[in-house]
Length: 69
Figure 1 (cartoon, rainbow, N blue to C red):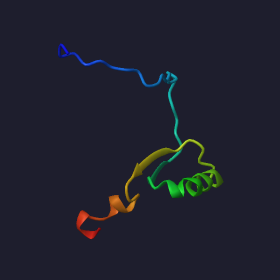
Figure 2: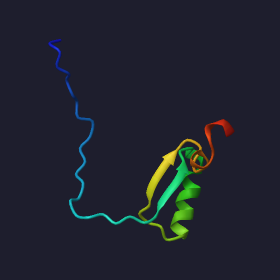
Figure 3: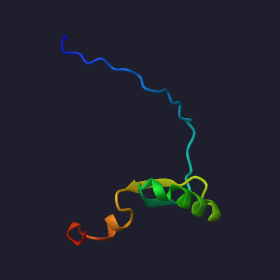
Figure 4: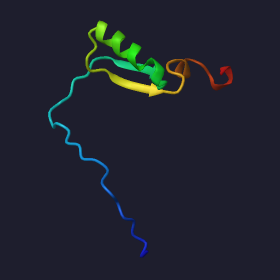
């Protein structure tokens, strides 16, 4: 190879250019077992367009120091 990297397009996505207004930010664990429950909870609270912050351990990751895990 001559040092250039070949890139392959995996998918195409067009994002609307207009301003986006989200509902609240939601911190959640990425454990797929709770996806349905989280979705139902957000729907019942009328949170239709959340900005999801998904991390290992969910909100406790932000609340405790690493030594407490």
